[in-house]
Image 1 (spheres, rainbow, N blue to C red):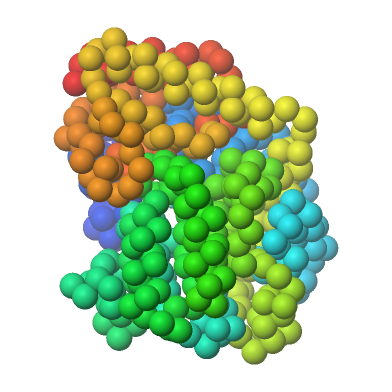
Image 2 (image 1 turned 90 degrees about the horizontal axis):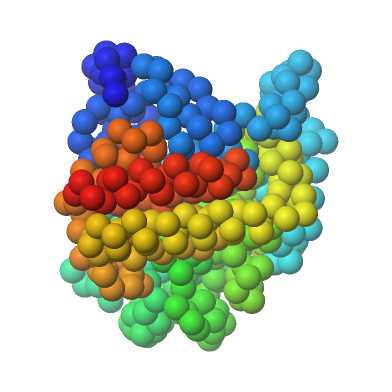
Length: 427
Ligand code: KE4
């Protein structure tokens, strides 16, 4: 495949955009080479500026659950854009999207729309700290909640007491309030509560971890977090920015039977346009300005275009059989990848929850961050490039989930599986 135009654009972009990209993962630092620059998408397919076509397994890192350019989404956007793009005033669409969210999530009685998942998690954390009057927060190794300062923290030397900044520019005085536990390890959470009595405002957890591949919660893990939060007076916050409306119409919380106090959403609810949301009980959310005293705002929060794309997407997901179809196609892909690796004698396990999945080059199940780090990341690079050469666009990192859309029909999935047979045989 030729990538001359991508290379030329990237060469110039790097001179005026940090790393040549507007989000780090897109720079392909983990896999090397020049990131292909995309210019068009249609259904499950995406095209780059050199005219190459790929089956897209990135789908903008989750939002495009209906695939690229779904007619219902495009029609909704055309209608809104004829009337305007932003009004700096409340609109009827914001109420409609809020209703679609609250009607499908019992724990969400009230919701605030923002512009990104990062804004959603930042705001939920501020609210949790305000209502508990505590500063501490527990997150999990390998989970990602956006780039808010309090989340860019790794376990500090005093792992049971202080978090340490995971990026320059994050004040140590702030990072120390973030404590890092191990995913699927309730004892590591108990230890943090015991070492920091009455100081922890909340636990932030991806109910299915989608930022270290795709790791499901162990039996009893989420229930255990709920119990610990109740025991210690902390809030349980499900970060469903990735899993929201992705794994079920009511997100993962509707599948696991555990009720969080706050939920963050994003990606799918904007249908590919910038959006985020956070919500919870009326009692909690009415602390948010202007109803309450916890400040949060945004010039383009609830933007009519993002709201229209979100309403169209969630309404389409309401169609009978949509999630069953996503499950069938995703299961077909999981089985095909497993078979392809086996036939090439490549160790592989696939983590999957509905239509988000991640193949790990490893023979043993993956249940935590350490397991992810033990997978064969070196062989991921040639696998990624072999798949690209066979017309499959994967996320350029072994830590990113793959996504299946309603446009990924059986033939498309078979194309990915055929490419995987060739790729596994070549690494
Ligand atoms: P954004 O600020 O990127 O909209 O959302 C942050 C976020 C919050 N919570 C979860 C569970 C998330 O997965 C994300 C963002 N996900 C990454 C993909 N791993 C976005 C891709 C990127 O950073 O370019």
